[in-house]
Length: 511
Image (tube, rainbow, N blue to C red):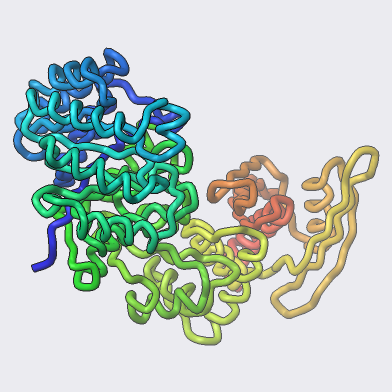
């Protein structure tokens, strides 16, 4: 059995420190309930002395957590901070006070203005004071990633002797290289007396984009708790993303000799919840929970995934609560992806017919970033209209503007294969196009209704035009046309209505 790694979630404390991510107590409680559902081991609920809101949040989260997880309050190594945190944590069945101070040369010299010996004395006092109120005390050595290792060994050992049950080794600025940080953890394990009896925690930041790598390297070298946030929220470039370390350990449990008890099927839900509350959305290509995490656009990738999911997916989307693999149809999609999606929509075609459909698909895909199901439905319906058509529009060129005269040149082919190229002017581009159609086709009707709508979202959407024309006998005929060019859609709709009128008249005449 691999080692159990505790997941310490600090979304409600460090995560909230992301600019614009401030949350009220009610919002924090919603996220806290989700964290409990996910089975996190520790919720860092806030910094009680910092504000009445944080104090109340810690109180309320302590109530809802029950005995399912530890609830933690952050403090400085200051008596008043610790006392306020202890008061706020009285509602928690499993309270923890998280106290500490900076240990790097710059923190000692520039922020705290104290010597190494004075810092050790402060650490000892803070831990002992916290132990007066709770049995579970975590000591953090802020900026340990840039500290002198000899001093780090001394202060961690002193904190443990004073009664710390957890020692937190943060790379506060995300400065370390993973193997350097791992070596720090390994050295502490080998040299600090009593460290085998406490939890070794790591809190890594993403300033150089290595927060997850730093955390995993620490686990590989003996850390047993990771401090992280949903979506990697946090100061500056953020913290280690909970979803990343959890799934990395799940995929590499044997190599890391590590596992967590997180309910991974709740990861996507948690990500969306935090995004919704904070207003900070993850980028589409974010690992595990991004919109594109299980989306495939390349034709080669699509073909592979359709044959066997694990050719390009190392994680089953269901394992993280995602809807499933998504085939994104674009100009890079191949025959297999289009055929698969059309089959899901209920359309099957022979090879020769499918090839012409694929070529039309590529024409549309070249004009749009993404081809949606509605686009495919419209494309197939347009093709069916053209297959049954007496007259088809092969090409349409329109020029217009102010002060230009709207002019349309249309190429139209009849059922016998004869082609006519006609040109006409009008009061506008649609009028010019329709007059050109009238020149090419002897039969026509009076336009009585004209409607246009976008098939899908986006300015590059296919436009579908519906028209109604009234024949000489008073009968009304409806026509539809769809294209990425709205004027072309209009002309197709008009021709479709004329075709239906001609077909009806032929049917009546018994032809």
